[in-house]
Amino acid sequence: MNQDFKNLTELLKHNKEVMVIDLLKETLSIDEDPYITSLQQPVEGLYLVGSFEPILEQGQPYYLYKDMQIVGNVVQYQNTPTIPDVTNVEALIKAKSDIFDAKGKLVITAKDLYKYSRHLKKKPTIPANAIKVAILVICNYLNSLCRYTNVKSPKYTLESLVKDEYHNLIYNEEYAKAYELTLDKVMEFVGKDTWHMYFYQIRGTSLVIEKTVDYRIYEWYRQKFEKEEDQTDEGLDTYHF
Image 1 (cartoon, rainbow, N blue to C red):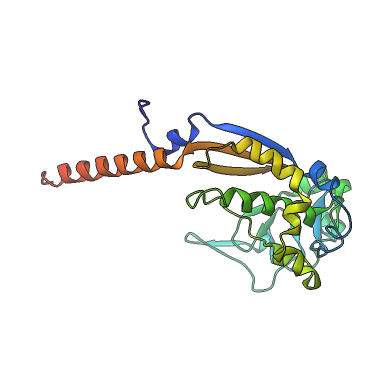
Image 2: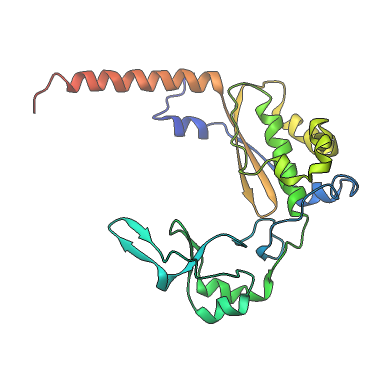
């Protein structure tokens, strides 16, 4: 711990190792039955060809720019979503408007909607839910390494992706077995020291895993910075403004 770090962010970036997993390739290598047939159908929406997450999800509220008002710092819309059918690409293009979600976040611009219109589909062109299962299996493994790993899991769960009648596959850890070869690669990347902290990103259909600092070192520096901050605050208390 002779290295001098200014903050925890700088610490996490130090000696970072990266592993990239082609989720589509790994998924296409597993057995169709029962691991693929046991999964729910992907949500309907608007998918870019080759993507497993929808740009727009059917049933979620979306609005055109003309329907958005900003009052103070608060985004307000009409009570009723102005895009009832997100799969109607022709209607979306005809509106010539950027599209926003209920929180006022830009989802897709009118320019990109027109540009990629020929490559937009109502359903994914790849095994989307099977790829999501792979992500969950890997996250579950990383979280099992150490009580302090705390890899942030996706918003979806295995229970939400698997049909009710196949939930026994979850309880018997069959999906982990299905992705056994993938997990072997992750285990080799992890190595024998299980105290490292891990983060991940999704890039296209690839999972990028980042192995950062040992948690014990992280905690040592966290306490160090916290103590220094407290001492600074105490010093300021001696001055009168």
